[in-house]
Length: 157
Image (cartoon, rainbow, N blue to C red; front, side, top):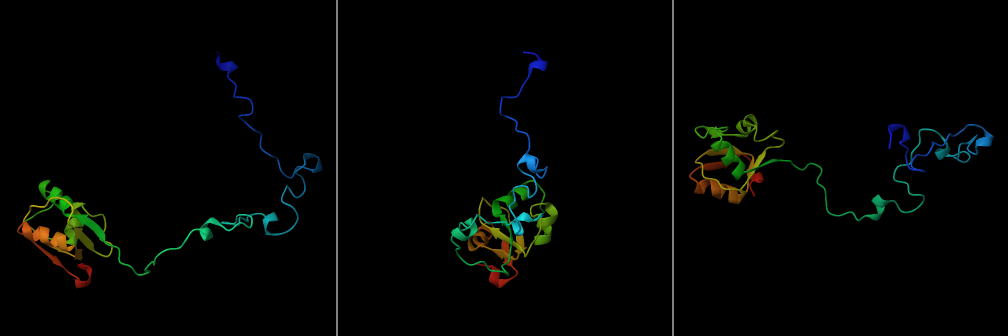
């Protein structure tokens, strides 16, 4: 086989349909769009329209309730905080606040606050101050000899 003998498989490439090139082409004048109406004009795409069939977004069930003003928390696990303390990225001497967590790189952004969950092992004696925490996270920090204060009462669940 030589480079000049390379060929695509027959039928693998297809020349494009040249629309609006005279009556002899078969797709002249209206260019296969029919006569008049929204779909015959340029720049129109009816999104979600399935030729009269019930569109997919209407066939699927709607479930639940989406709260419009829901708070979004940055979630941090205790195991990750312990990892950062071991790597000396977090200082255990002072109080660890949300701003400290952002500076260390553990949390990218605070959003509506930082919420701490109890996943992972935690053994450091630290003072934490965050917007929210799970009960098991509070217990785990206190068991390790530290304290976890939640700034808003509604966030602690």
